[in-house]
Length: 368
Image (cartoon, rainbow, N blue to C red; front, side):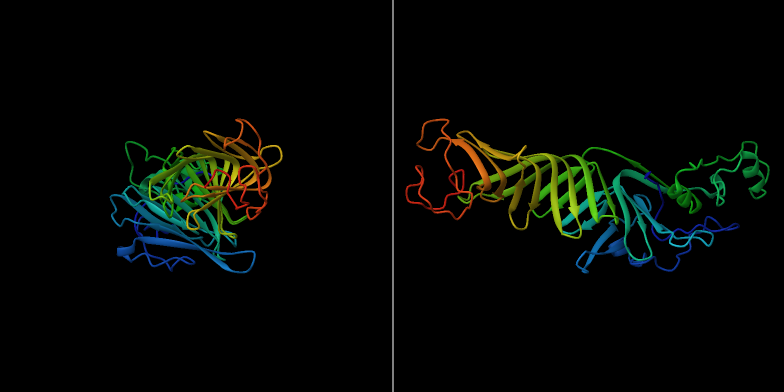
């Protein structure tokens, strides 16, 4: 989908001449809050019905209220639109608060959001860098149901105006962009851009940065494109300050399952320990990251004296300790000959004595 650009507070409706430029607040769009609440900005909510029948709420909020820093407008279906045509809302905000999108435990902030909301409540969201503005009515050629009419036909359909020495500019509407068509009829323009680090995600103590977010009701997953970088401040068990940093190719937020997963070449680094996997289920509130590997590409965690691979590695985000689950292999020094592989318990509760653990006490790999 192509990104769009739009104008200010309130709902902007496409109207027929002679008053196309006046912005008259229409009836509220489905699940939208009143635009007149200046203290809270303007917002729209999508309601998703999860697989178990429960309701999930996704909110999009413009934090600013000044015309100088951005806009909020809703382009509702017109009489000639087919049944089921969604309401398209555009949010832009150049102020520090930006546009705030709340999905599960994640708060996403970026300059621009375009929301297509279906009558049932769910829909499609795109969030990125970019701007939006209201169009000058004189610069917009009225758009009929078909946008492929010849220039001559378009000229004859334009209402008569006083003669001008220079023809009024015409906004070109790509025939394959129905969203752009809709917004232009509402005299709004949205221009999205992909800028690394422009989409900021906060989950508890963790801060992540990406370049673009796309959510769609077809699968209920919000995907944030990378490259993703993140950092988490924490306090280790011995009260020494520590910081977890890392990267991944993308993020997937599953609205139905309420999970956040780092996807593709995930790396977690905390002090001397570096861990990696293709997928990591990340939960800041539970202080845990679950690294998941496969037979061909197991999860791995490495320190100066240890290398451990397993199908699943459970990482405690606060203490930095790890527990391996499933088929495990490793090499580490713990009073043994360097490079000797020691059998580690597949079950973290296994109390079988081992050469490095004669008392049989449960010990997470890494000695924590």
